[in-house]
Image 1 (cartoon, rainbow, N blue to C red):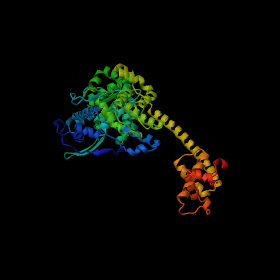
Image 2 (image 1 turned 120 degrees about the vertical axis):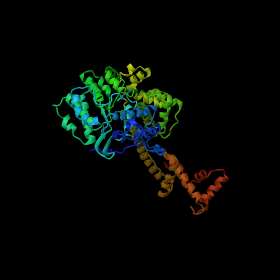
Image 3 (image 1 turned 90 degrees about the vertical axis):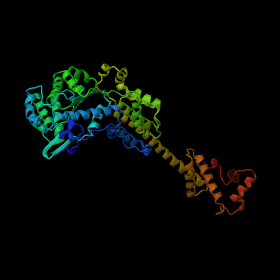
Length: 531
């Protein structure tokens, strides 16, 4: 076996009588309560407020964490319950220790080839589920999260003291090909099973051009039966809406799998899949075994606010804002309650806030981002606002150019950063030249190179100078002030008439400042005399 994601069977005591004595059911994890479903499915990625202070290029990467967040909502609990029932009910008639199971493996291939529309199992048990909803509402993500709570492969060795060497494939997910090709689906099945179990079905059957679809379908059916597959999930079934023999053949195949084996089949698709599924009454009947589940966009209600509250903490802008009623409303209007669009809009709004330098989310900013990047999905959003399923069904997919939008914002930010760096570099060159010229002027005024450089550095700490005369004046004043403060420790002149202390003292008596007194005495030369 190539895949390491498997467990050895551990058998749980069953509360429900129908599930007793069936190793395929007893090896499954216990049935979850609603609280356990919430605890297991909810996922909130790491967040640290200090990350808001990181440079923009790091925060652009960190924002991607948002897409791993999973907030459990009521329809997730409902979906988990349906799948749990579907999985176990589908195993009731396929107990490996039942007298009919061994014979079914032998008879299966022959019966399906002869298109015998009856089986060896209890057909009163519903074994299908159809999940329909617009793209971006989280259908496939929810299924994946629920399946993640199940072991995909269970290895059995013994059961109740009896040898039982069996490999159980609990669930299998496939995608309907764009051309609704049955052969494409069957080959995808072979490849997927080979990857999980280390078999070589694709090499043995899939590569051969001699085997027709009518031959490959029974082979796939027998493999499903022999590995005790619990649920077969087919995603993107809207591709069956392509008219032609292939679509009808695939729907008939799904019906056959249900009838002859009893394996539950979960079909997932957009609203455009409803027409083709309803045309085939047999498949519609089987698909409704656990009731059709319409995973529509969210309503603007308490659950919508709950969802926004779960993501609102994840603000990597430096000035985070509170979730207001106005923001709740605008996020709904611009995303129409589609979770995928909401997450992308929230992420892209943060990226815009970072790249623009505002570092703060606002209603205006969110609307601007929506205007810039939601143009392609406006027809779909308009159809959703109308509530008309026939209009919604016209749009199989919602294309939100998220990565393109992120790239555009990144390029805009890089342009701004480049210009800023170049300006800073130029300013640094200009500042260096300014300091060198000031140093020369201060030398002429009698300051040593060391004293002049010290004075320039100190005054530049408090003020940014662009004018040479202002810098020389401030640096010289600073130097004089230092001399005055150190007058008790060092004599600056021998002659008392020119002693700075005497000059300043006499100047004060005349009402002059220290600086004016030094200029008046000729100690400080006028800048215009030097420059």
